[in-house]
Image (cartoon, rainbow, N blue to C red; front, side, top):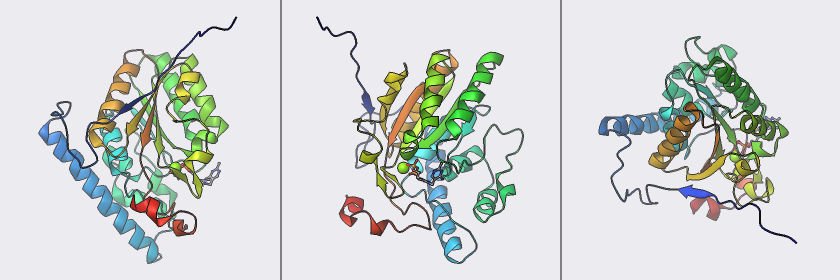
Length: 276
Ligand SMILES: Cc1ncc(C[n+]2csc(CCOP(=O)(O)OP(=O)(O)O)c2C)c(N)n1
Ligand SMILES: [Mg+2]
C-alpha cells in the first residue's frame, strides 16, 4: 500500500505591487531608513551607469551590471547586522556599497587591480567570487565557525540561478541543513546565466523549493520589491540568530542588462521579454 508521508508548500512574498503601491503601511522600517535605502538604490544606479561608461572608455575591464537588481541587493545587505558576514558572488556591487566598501575600490577591482577587493579587517565581508557557485561553501564554513564559537553572527551568501546547477551550492545547502547553521542563502534569480535561461537550470517550479530537500525552509520573494526583500532577509537572519538554522531565499527578479560588458544579450533573448 502506498500512502502520503510528507507534504510541502512554497510561499511567495510580495508587499509592493508592480506599480510600487503598498497595500498596508510597512512598519518594519522607519521613514529615515526607507529614505536611506532609496538613496542607496539611486546611488547604485548612478554607480552602474558610470561603471559602464568607464568600461566603454577603456578604463575598466569587464563589468557586470546591476541594473534592475538594486532592490534585491540593497535591501538584503541593509538588513544585515554590522558584524554579520556578507559573502557575495561577482555581481553584488550595490551590496558592497551598502556594506561601506568605498566605491573607488569596487571600480579599482573591475579595473583589474585586486587591491580593490582587500576588504578592511574590521568588515566581515568576503571579496567577489568569480568562479560560479564556490562561495556558498565558504559561507557554510564561516557559519559553522560562528556556530562553534556561539558568537551570534549570521552569514548571508549570494549566488545566482545559474549557480544552483553547481554541485558546490547543493553541498553547501546540505551541510547548512544538517548542522543547522546560522546561514541565509540568497539566490538572486535574475532568469539568466549568460545565455542560459532559468528553465534550463532546473525542471523544478521554483528554486526556493530546493531547500525542502535539504530539510529547511525556502521562500520565493519578489526581488524587485524592496520591502519584501528586506522582510524576508530580516526574518531569516533572526531565525538563524536564534538557533533556527538556515533559510533559502529566492529573489525573483530580472537581469535587464547584458550579462557583462563583454556580452550582447540581443543575440540570444527576445526584446519583447525584456520590455515585459
Ligand atoms: C565555475 C565557473 N564556470 C563558468 C564560469 C563563467 N560564468 C561566469 S558568470 C556565469 C553565469 C552565472 O549565472 P548566475 O549564477 O545566474 O549569475 P548571474 O550572472 O546571472 O548574476 C558563468 C557561466 C565561471 N565564472 N565559473
Ligand atoms: Mg542569473
